[in-house]
Image (cartoon, rainbow, N blue to C red):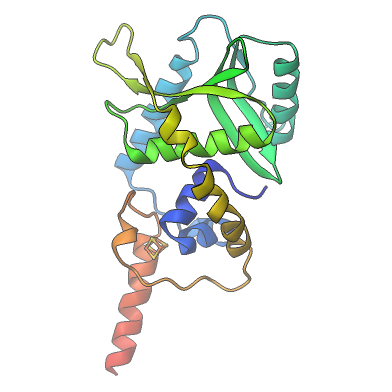
Length: 227
Ligand code: SF4
């Protein structure tokens, strides 16, 4: 696989992070509060699948594992679209090996509306970029996307799913993604570790899981310089 939404965004935050994900993921240290937030987000996403009533979920796991079988998911999605299924969850697409799995596609008269589910009270720019990436891949697979929504976590816990429309903003990221996706694909395959100075990107927009590794490296090189 080339890039996913997550790897693209991680590469845009720092190309070294993308490289380490591919070559040395064992160096990741995920802080417990981040892991907790990721788990909560997964639960919220699972519940959101029912927000439009009956749905078909495209998730397929490799036999005996919890690793998604992306090829089988893409095939299942193509079949669901050909059957004009009304609500498709975890709809998977691939374009030149770049891959996405959209949280929810809801059929319309002319194609599908796209819903990205985020367990957050308000929409941030990063969420719109995420939706833009999904749109980029799906559009290039020839599926027509009408409106795009971020589903936020509202205050009414009996019905917490609040869609916020971001169609214009998310589609507006198409060129930005196209301008970077091919270079990031190339960079993640480089043989040598990408060298990037530690800096603001280590905590913005997300705290980097290689923070300890890179900052220790930098500290060691500063100590070497003093000798
Ligand atoms: S700690 Fe900083 S320099 Fe190192 S991979 Fe993460 S963002 Fe990049």
